[in-house]
Image (cartoon, rainbow, N blue to C red; front, side):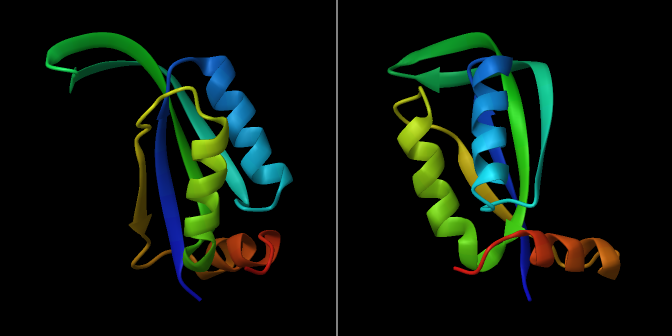
Length: 106
């Protein structure tokens, strides 16, 4: 079983909560952490932007990542949202098993 963390940025804490709750309620993620009020600098449409954002870290199985990405894209307000999947190389086995147990089959 391969586990991934999916890093997602959003334009507001409310949007992060909506997306996180949707991912967990649909069992595409076993859990989601939200970090609010991060400060982001980034290039967009030829300009540097300086905004506040919120981050979601979703815990899921690798096989669910493509469907999770599609779900986020469908409900996200950004045209090009940051959605990146990071493989978990090692971890506390009971926690990784919990992620596998609490997500649905692909």
